[in-house]
Image 1 (tube, rainbow over the protein chains, first blue to last red):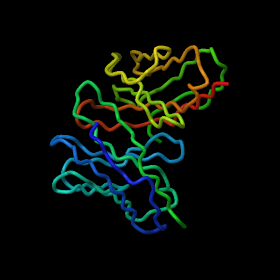
Image 2: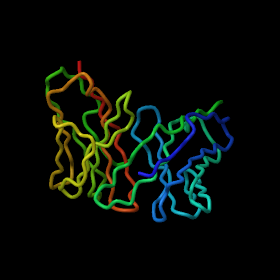
Image 3: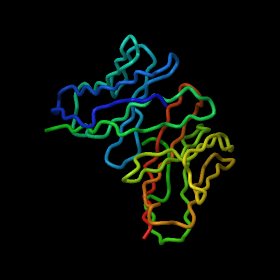
Image 4: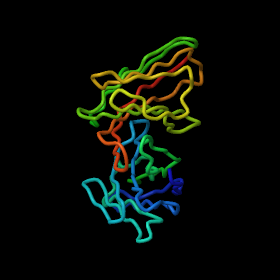
Length: 112
Length: 114
């Protein structure tokens, strides 16, 4: 997978927007950016993915820079239940092996 | 609820034993993946099956094996267990393969080897 770099940890006040950055400077033209999160030893949960346009769903928004070398996951109104480790993943376009490579992610703590 | 079911939730066993972990994918998903999460290694890909056939292998030990059955459920067999095999084992499933591949994870099986 393309190498991704994320901050180790972040705090955010409850009710505020949480902005989680990710650098993926080696991303190729047809590779998607995926975000997953893991809440305390539960199974990882898919959040959102994108290619080049900004994306929004019921959970979050994904902003991808024009050069596609970085992205930001936005949780618009963070709640205590959003405390989790967030993973930014850019799987290689490799038909025949669709594994996800999880790095260390960003540990997001929502502060009451 | 992701729709992926893993059983059992917890498993406690002794060194040298053999266990089987079971995964039922989401309805319609043809791909099943197994991941291991231990404290010192993070989430590691073990193996992928697609429609009954092995599709990709990660750093899966020779003592571990898996299969996917005609009804698409999958089993991960761990044998000659060692203390270091204690970990969370997650199964994921996806409907697609290739470029756009969203994986949905089960709640995991926590294996404790004593």
